[in-house]
Structure formats: C-alpha cells, structure tokens
Length: 193
Image 1 (cartoon, rainbow, N blue to C red):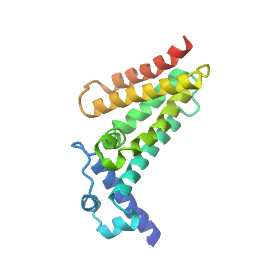
Image 2: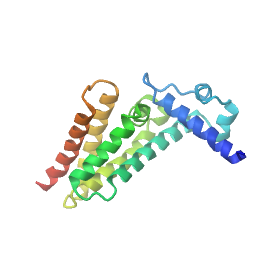
Image 3: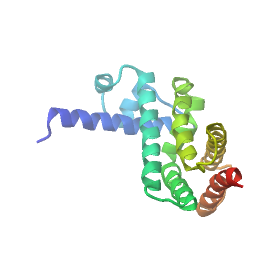
C-alpha cells in the first residue's frame, strides 16, 4: 500500500518531469501551470500543493537539472588523477547528460536566456561549473588566472553544447567529446607552459 507521503512524492516527481520536458522543449520553454498539470496528468491542486507559483516551479526544475549536472561531473571525475583522464571523464559525463537527454541540456543551457523566471537564476549556477573546471586546472596557476580560464572554458563549452543541441553543429558524438576534452586540456596546459 502506498503511503500519503509516497503518493505526494510521486506527484512531485511527475510535475518535475513534466517541467523538464516543457522547459527543455525544442521550440523553447512553454511552461504554464496548466501545461505542466496536463503533461503530468494531475490537477492544479497538486501543483500548488508542491509549488507556490509558476516561477518558483521553473526555478526548482532548473536547480534540479543543474544539481544533476554537477553531481554527474563530480561522480565522473571521481578519483581520476591525470588531467587527461579527468577532462575526458567530465566531458563524457556532461555529453551523456546534455546530449543523451537533450531536454536536460536545453533546460540548463538555453532556458536561462528564454524564460524570464531564470534570467538571473542561471547565472547563479555558473560558478558551480566554473569551480569544477577551476579545480581541474594546474595548482601553479594563481586564483585570478584559474577563475578567468575556467570561466572562459565554461563559456566555450556552453556555446558548443548549445549549438550541438540546436543542430547548428553536425558532428559525430565522439568528435564533440574529443574536441571539448582538447579544449579543457589546452586551457590547462596554457598555464603550465
């Protein structure tokens, strides 16, 4: 028998899944309370049981995808010590999350530019990814160089993944992984040369 709390969690998960689909839609975000409830096959009562309003829901969806991305990168890098291995694992994990599940990629990379509820919210999560890249840079770099380089790499990767998701770059997956890995490594090597 399912408990009341378990049913509530199932409804919340269904709403979040619907939100990911709608916020990460191919034609751009199309998130309304009615659309979310219709996609999740739930009434608005259950939406408001979990979320205060549409904008807080959109931010919750975005945060969930950003945390999933961060966790995937941290798990992928794990105990890898060599820079090449760390970079390849991180890029591969991000490709798996963003490309294999393109709605997740569009939520994280495109929605902050398309949905007003995320106009500043997306910038708040960027430091998380900048820090992950910064941690992979050589320890000899000073803090300012690490920040500048990591921010540039995150920007470049964001542009590449967005263009790939939008169909503007039509390369094989492995070539994308190789190129992005080389980009991360060349940024790392620039500071040690």
